[in-house]
Image (cartoon, rainbow, N blue to C red; front, side, top):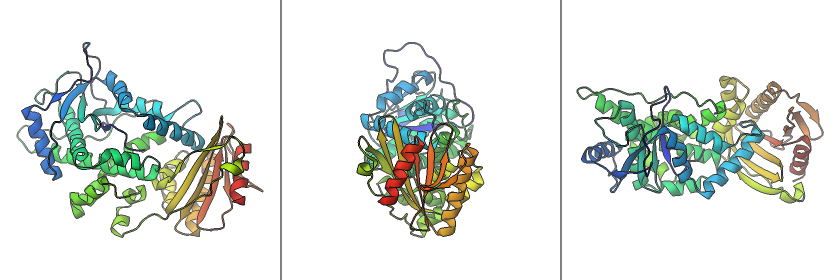
Length: 418
């Protein structure tokens, strides 16, 4: 998941109110901060150890208007990213043939988002019924959501957040890690501000964690969308306690990071970096009509999340934990598609563990993995076919996933000859 041009606070327990309101000429209208909101911004900026941004505007949006507001922020590049990720996720099994990532994201946002900030417009919104941002009238949950978005405004004023989104657009791993820093930082300082309010007379502590999953959100995508707010927040808390906010600032400024760093905070302090993994270009070898649609790094979280499509969490976590780097490339030809993966692990045993877990995943999905000249082939009822291809490096797992067996075998043959 990349950090899109609008940052959001999400709820994770019960959906907050924010339904219909009376007709308005502009449902997304905002105003300059009131003195009370300006004071709140300055308090949060002090906690974040950065100067508050000037000329910020705030408003409210009804829950029914969240999706139109999200759509208004999407660029052509964002829509292309969603389309490309849809191709990949359909092949892997995160999405069905009639599902697309943008629609899933819209549905998730409609139900779970409680606050939004737009870097392009330098404006933020809280999801609520009332048309005005009135601190005295806001519930604790709404004030907390506002605090989260104010952190995003502070981040955006000091760091090239928009450029970071563009920089990570072609890398699922770095994109999700960067989002984890952005949202984890906002969730952490939102929590610190909440705690400060709880210490005041009449203060109420709010734990903004937990929302009912949108019924139309596949579980694996639900895990992905929530990862920055949960594991990302835990990581930010650890790094902040050890080195202060300056360490967080480096990653907001564009220093590369992986989800393995987020999952294993000790790797960052040890100076570890993922290995660079490459795949040969196969457009000519696949034949006429084939084009390269997307490619990049999947990363440990996405590898784990893929296994969790069918495996319990613990075996999936264990099988992905030896990840040291990967490369994937997606090719398309009219209605056909195929993705190639080279995943590098710490050693031969770790690679074998992942390969066995992947075969178990495919068996649970209804395939019968079997040896063939192309490799270990597993064809699902819908035609999607995964082939584990023999690798010259025993610490790597090579595999392809095609929209049909014919496509998968063609890609496996081309990969073997390359």
